[in-house]
Length: 140
Ligand code: HEM
Image (cartoon, rainbow, N blue to C red; front, side):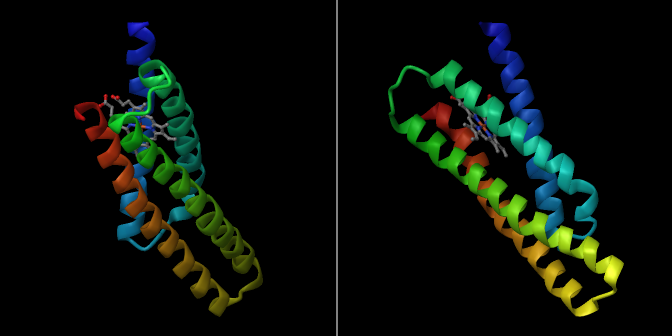
C-alpha cells in the first residue's frame, strides 16, 4: 500500500512538474517552439490526470467530501480545463501552422501563433490554481 502510494505520488508529481514547467515557460515566450513540446506535454497531462485520479482513490477514496477534497476537486477541475484549452486551442492552431508552412499563408500564421500564446497563458493560470490547491489540500 505504502509503496503504491509513494510510486503514484512520484509519477504524479513528475508528470505534473514537466507539464506545468513547460507550460509556464511557453506562456512566458509566447508559445515559441511549442511544436516540439506539445505532444510530450499532452502525454504528461494525461499521466498527471490519470495518476491523480488513482491518488485520489488511494488517499481520499472513502467517499467523504470535506474541505480538503473540495480544494482538491477545484485543482483537478482546473487541470482538466487547462488540458482541454491546451489540447484544443494550442493543438488546433499548431496543426494550422503546420499546414500554413506548406501553403505559405503568412497572415493566418500570425493569428494562429497568437492563439497558441493565448492558450498557453490561460492554461498556465489554470495550472497555478491546480498547484496551489494540490499542495495545500493536505494541510486543511
Ligand atoms: C485530474 C487531475 C488531478 C487529480 C485528480 C489530482 C489528485 C491529487 C491527489 C489526490 C493528491 C494527494 C493530495 C493529498 O496529499 O491529500 C495530489 C497531490 C498533488 N498533485 Fe495532483 N491531481 C491532479 C492533477 C495535478 C496536476 C495537473 C498537478 C500540477 C500541475 C498536480 C500536482 C500535485 C502536487 C504537487 C501534489 C502534492 C504531492 C504531495 O504533497 O505529496 N496534480 N493530487
